Amino acid sequence: MSESELHEDMNAVTLENEDATHEVPKDAGSEKAPAGPRDAGAPFDDEDADMIVRSSDLVDFRVHKVFLSKASLVFRDMIKLQARGPLSATTYPDTLSPTGLPIVPLLDEPATAVDMLLRFCYIPLLPTPITLDEIQLALHLGDKFQMPHVLAAAKNSILSQMESGALPADRVFAFAWLHRQRDLVLAAASHPSREPLLAGPAYPEYEFIPALALHRLLAFRRHLRALAATEAPCGDFSAWAKVIDERRELTLQTPF
View 1 (cartoon, helix red, strand yellow):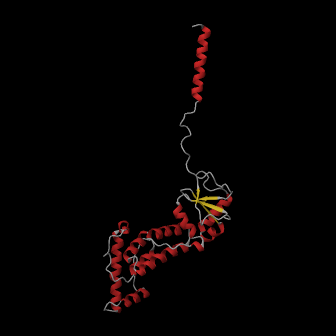
View 2 (cartoon, rainbow, N blue to C red; view 1 turned 30 degrees about the vertical axis):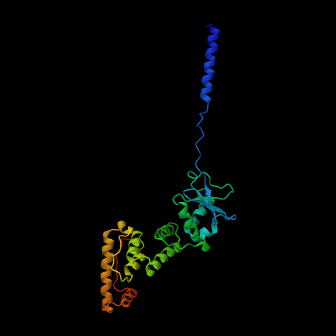
View 3 (spheres, rainbow, N blue to C red; view 1 turned 60 degrees about the horizontal axis):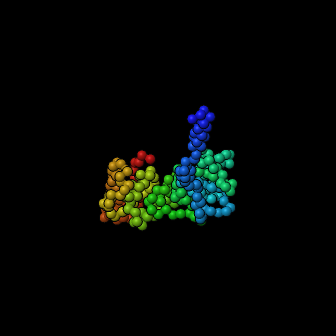
């Protein structure tokens, strides 16, 4: 092979290597990009909304600032901060929607929680928590976003269910202790139930409260029965109610 032919072969190999270097693998870019935000839909799809609340799982709720700021002190402060500049830009680089609405991300709350939270901000959509899971979520949201009416709705729901017999008092007591709701703890402990305490099934809440809580409940009930017996030795439940109304010598210590 002549010297000129050798140079031609080397140049050909070099060109082939360069082409291989710039060749794009067949699979490159074939992976799908993560799904972007999606709309929550009705009733949070008003065309005249002036803000978007985005859940942690990227669901966008179109809302009105005035309702949120009036319902929640936390939302009021967040809206003020949003007016000064974008929130959490490192986590949500898109701080404005394609339509130009500001986006307020709630990094810790999934769409189910945000849906309930926002309904509490709109009077026509005001939900009534029914299950203990819903009541637990309402207590969490009401406390976190400083919404007293949400806390009241949750507490009224559980109290009405206890009064109707849908929820036994000892389970309400355990639930209230677990969630550090002293007024509910006292209401459940004072409830004039004719059924023996702790005679029902082992409710899930029992697993998460200390034995001390149940000990104090039993001691409180013994004290309450003793006071009621002084009013009606025959065990008339109206005497129990009278003692409760007067709150005489009734104490139940809690760590909260």
